Image (cartoon, rainbow, N blue to C red; front, side, top):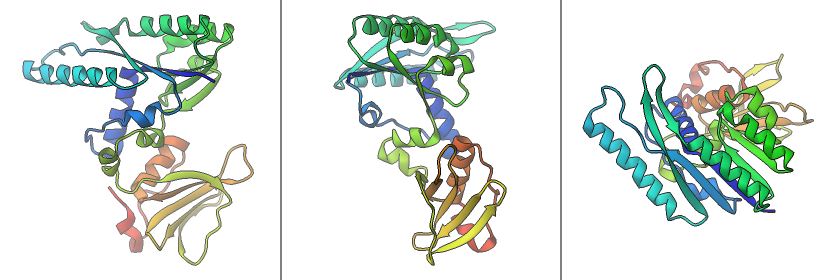
Length: 271
């Protein structure tokens, strides 16, 4: 099975920035490209060099542009990566817009599908304009996995054969070690029948939704679990502090936990 990944750099960058503000007070986060590319024979990266924004200083613009150029040059030297650059232009009333990126992705995905160079295509993007492309690829017999931000359009989601959300956990797994360290204790999801022992202290529960939250006393981390949709077991989040567990439960699973822990466990809150 030959897998290619077509990656909209602007989409990924925006999602990483959202995660940084949500979990790390806006600290810069860097991708471990080896982790992101695992499982793909080729990765096609598409992005546009930044255009100068209104009221942006020349110094700030040059720094932003040099950072983008450095990233593109780095990716171009990595095995299995191919970098394609578009343009960015400022349009009054519409802000900054990428040019050529969508067209390049569409053309390349169609060419590789028609030539049967790949058997599975991954598209990391969230633009609804890709909906006709996914429908066309499906009609050609290509299996397309869409990797998308949380608020992707329903039409785009429906056009894909499989879907993976750019969840907080997924972004975390793609980061380099120094960036991951900025999060503090971060929870890991797993499935199974949650069974607590004497090393756990109950913190909170929601009987209606079947949610249970415990403190694992040995390492003083949070263990949250609830019934897994369409499964006979439970989904657990383990190993995180309270702040990160609460955010991941909300962001990735749509569950709301209390904002504060009992006073005896406030030191597990995190930031």
